[in-house]
Image (cartoon, rainbow, N blue to C red; front, top):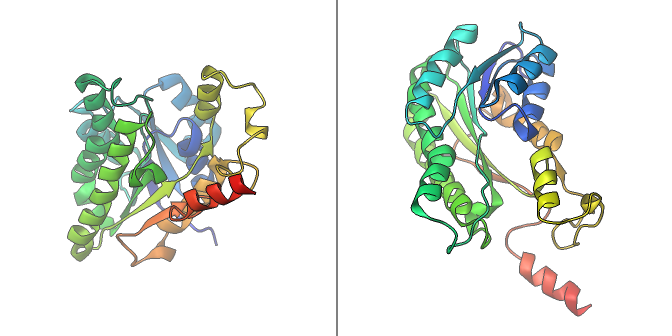
Length: 263
């Protein structure tokens, strides 16, 4: 028995990286998926790979105020119903306090926090009808973040609060809301970003032990596998959970690093 048989799942930001990995695995487990992205060509390529009978594609820029409502309408038209919304799309613009102006902050918050909320709002009637669920893809940086990811960290902290708030609010309607706080993951975009930062092409093979105790970064496919439980009926009736998908506990990381430095 496939774990997601007959479910319809809308995944934002799913033409690359973790979103694309989820789309592939969800289809392999019997779901029909609605792919989303800004790049139509990339979206259509993935749709053809998965098969039109298993995948739809909707295009849109989540920074646009009107986009979430339009995407919600298009997504529901793809397969006539909706069981799951995965809020995966996010901007990861790097900037510290001095580099973060009002315009860049507003755009990042619009995509990473406002759009997920407005998509849930627009899709709530469909989710109530299917007794469905929402899975928000957050980050371990939600807890405090790092200096050059200030706005991103703020947005993920807000997403975590929203997850718990809406889980409490919507539970009576049978709609569940959970979140994965993901650690450092090797995606196409992350690989290129580090190249742009000046690291060599083999940088994933030379990771600091305190950042990757296992010797490698998390893979997008591993995040997708973790997501299966939360978008399936196996996790019902759990709601309001924020789960860290990371190689070390958030509490104790600095102590461990200091111990290793002494050794």
